[in-house]
Length: 271
DNA sequence: AAACAGGCCTAAA
DNA sequence: TTTAGGCCTGTT
Image 1 (spheres, chains in turn blue, red, purple):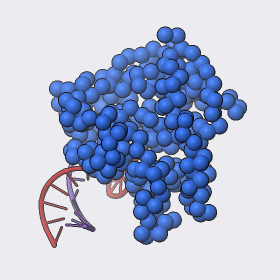
Image 2 (tube, rainbow, N blue to C red; image 1 turned 90 degrees about the horizontal axis):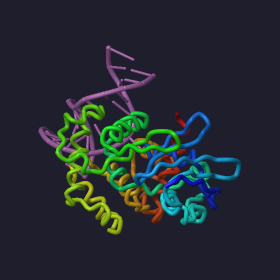
Image 3 (cartoon, chains in turn yellow, brown, cyan; image 1 turned 45 degrees about the vertical axis):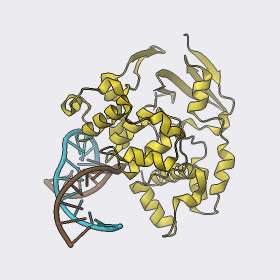
Image 4 (cartoon, rainbow, N blue to C red; image 1 turned 30 degrees about the vertical axis):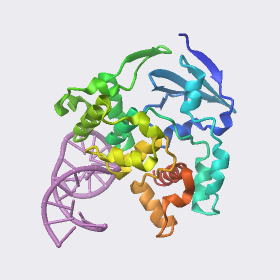
């Protein structure tokens, strides 16, 4: 199928740079002209902004990307709940344009296992090596890409086999998760429809998945927007700008979006 | 050179 | 229930 290019109708609600650089995903990269290339659900795409318009070029149907960028949800009205006249509002306004991507569940699970105690640059490197080693080779726009490997591709491997990834002790965790998903012991698709707390509990049964990683997977891979991952950045922001008895539930069913605004703002201030 | 990265596990209070 | 140390690897 030949790639087609089209213009996003609600482009104003999507900010490419913020969405790709806010730390939720690891496989989108800009070239020197600011054109983003990436792969999702086995399809390559490139996106760029031209004035007010955002264009997308892909051989996948438009619906796939419409869902991927969660474009049918009205982030403006959701975000109004975060206008507290203080710090959270500041974060929200700064991060406006971020979309919570609907990433592949297994990719999210695997990526956030890798993320533990790592910086984004290294996470990206490890994920890319994983895709190059075990994903499908794809060609798009005169370039070569690799899909995120299905968990089945990792069956039977031992931790030493993943040494090329240079992911250290996380190799074991990846293999445990891959086996659970591939064998059907862990049904990620059914967890999308399950209660988010139950989904989190289920994920945390796996070795190497604690509270933080589970929350990330639930939010970014299972689309439960209530989840509020707390890492060192968020912990710091909460300590400085929220009351001691703050509870994520107080932010409602889109707490996860608020978390992403806070995270993006907090990091922008220090880096 | 030692400390620290978007944590987790285990052992020990 | 909370806390310390170790863990792979890479960077500062």
